[in-house]
Length: 188
Image (cartoon, rainbow, N blue to C red; front, side):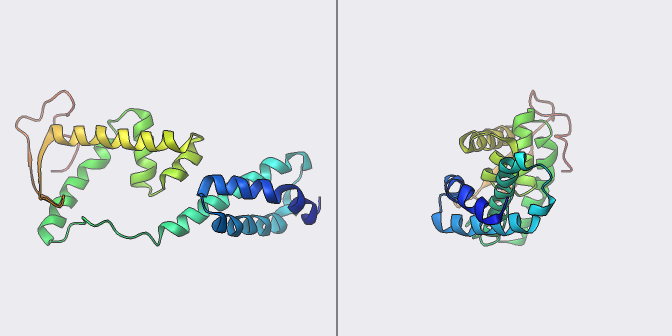
């Protein structure tokens, strides 16, 4: 199949597909253009023309993921980043607990937090990777964060200022609670 035929057949459906996932018609034009460049460069590698539609849509999904990765590099930093050396040290110490505590979560929340918080993917990319709706991905991340917070607070008292900066923490008494292992699985 020639690239002109592919353009006529897939241009409009792909553009709508991309708009539905990005909400940005201008970005959709760029993503679709990138998709057709990749199709043109790789069409010779397609062995079964009956599989052209899933092949084209897979290239498009990858182009959407690439778009979000590029966009993420321009995001502004959150307002409440730790600012003093003491705040940075305290945050770093508490951060050593996060990965082991994520490992204690049920699989669907562990998977969502690992992909978004530890691997740095967006919730949109999470939804595409897991094949679920964006609302489901957002829900898993939010519920996972709440469960993670419960685990952390079961092990430690965390004191924050009015802006949400962590001022101090203290490991709770005997570290044997229902939701907390004997060492909280962290390096405090």
